[in-house]
Length: 393
Ligand SMILES: *Cc1c(COP(=O)(O)O)cnc(C)c1O
Image (cartoon, rainbow, N blue to C red; front, top):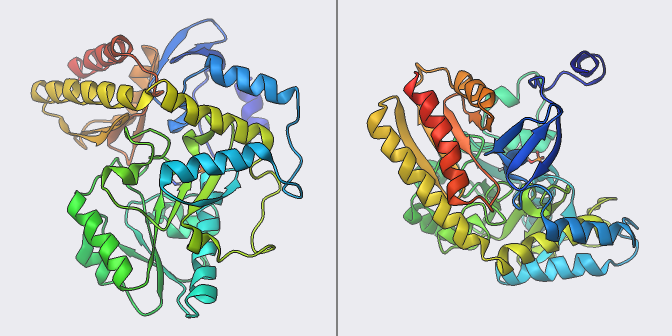
């Protein structure tokens, strides 16, 4: 089968020869019936884990009614989801699409429309951060402050400038009369789980207000409970003008969203933006179920508790194993930076052999992003495997 993969799938990934057949809770099962503990959750997507009874039931019921009809007609489930997001955000209108890149691409368009139509200005420039990740479309890969993703793709769209994450002076130095928005992740995900202090976020919000610059927060990875808050920006008591969501939103069903303060959202007029699949019945019913389950089952408390437990345990390991340089993150978005002399990919490989799924970002950070339903004993089970690997380095 892996030969057929090579024959028929474009070579953008290089996966190991493991075919997963089913999942249950935080565990995955391969064709041979081997059981794996999943600390990556489909890259921070499967927040309710696998085969969650509430999500499975909601999807089953929805498939028996209707899946898709396009946005030529209003969709009740889409309105309910937008209302739910508005309540969680504190007043917003939403546009639904299918992925994180698509949400960011739409946010970029919305910011330019706002600058032209509402501010009557010729602002068009974006400031984004070094080590950021915003997606793989041409505009979002340009917004992504990592050259390796932009290689061979020129000419790239114009109007993107880069600054240091967490450094307000570096951002201010890039601001011109043409700056229309700043795009930033609350915690940098693919760039290595990088955090900035609360004072930075307050300064950033004030700088944006003073200069009539929109603050766009890319919550594709941090959103939907991952950091222990429903949205990552809520960690800092600030509110962006536009927020983008995807990954965890549908609990495994593809859906993305642009969520914006109403006055910003209203810069879009009918015909300005569209998505055929965006916000269909299946995707919105799934997302509604995910958010309601996070709230009803008090999963944010679990994320904070289990997240602190994992970080504490990793910090204990750090004292024992000096090649662990730093443990960081919030909630169940955790990075464990290891010394560059250690082969991170090899640790991932060894973990996989011992049936623990983790991954490596930025070449030297082990990422832990399990389903939000992870229990303490399951966390211990994964940490035990990690310690065993560390002890053999
Ligand atoms: C994953 C990710 C994206 C891209 O999402 P896709 O669904 O793969 O297009 C964008 N921004 C952030 C912060 C992400 O983590």
